[in-house]
Length: 197
Length: 197
Image (cartoon, rainbow over all chains, first blue to last red; front, side, top):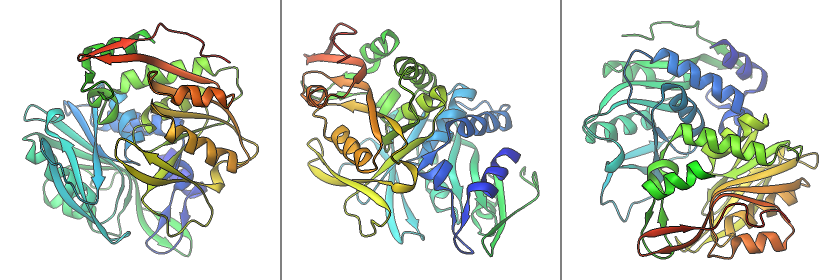
């Protein structure tokens, strides 16, 4: 998605070979018009999948997910993250380890809002090693729903998350794919490289 | 806002005299089309205020704030909540006590994204005792920006948050105002009662 790649080039900060900061339009400050275009793009890519629900994770997944939900005309459910869950009745949970923050969160969604009749599109802001995405897949599968695919705003293609998901047979659509972060520069993979399996 | 009141009547659950659960369209599952209408309504109410930025708080404030940002054509910044902040360099922070959860969080925004040139609209999902709103006002004021007003999706008018904010001279626009929760029923205040000061 060219608009997004341009924005990453312009405003993203490659802080190291592994860390890309996009706080100015996605993770802290949010550009609503860009989110709208991102939502339209996800809706277009998954328009033939009969999606009934979007599942994302707080907080940075919410804006792109809600815009995708608007254009796919489906509700959005966001998983909550907590250190530990005391009350888990009625919840579907999974453990997600964050290597960046070196902490494990339990993520959860209510059983009420995702069930076996659903065909779910999972959306998240970043895909790196795939831990969050795998946790979301786990809770969606626990609900009995089908995972129709995963929409990612920014994929760090130099980490193995996308590979892991594709090995599970899951369609991954990443709007920007980063091949490398090198000397403060962002190098993109060419668009549309084997996104469909 | 009639559409919102209808939805609260239909899907909200008055769990006690103080607790209204709107997990099915706002706090956990999100209805994107309703959020779009909410965004348009906030934009309309604050259209003459020359808003330059919206500030909200994760997670449930993000969807209505992003939609309002879309129609006001301004960026949105969401404050993060954490138990304690180890790194606070470059951050504006405030302490917010949640009576519901009985915990105090530090909320923060980056100095980079709100400054003295900004005219800020604060948006949040709920207004009860006003703790979160007061924390958001505190960090916006620390940035040097002006607080143009506060947009609230659901105000519990039987708690004193709205009064506290109006005493500070701040314009509060609440799209639904709940006079009472009684025997599982939601009783609304008549619309447009002294929202302007």
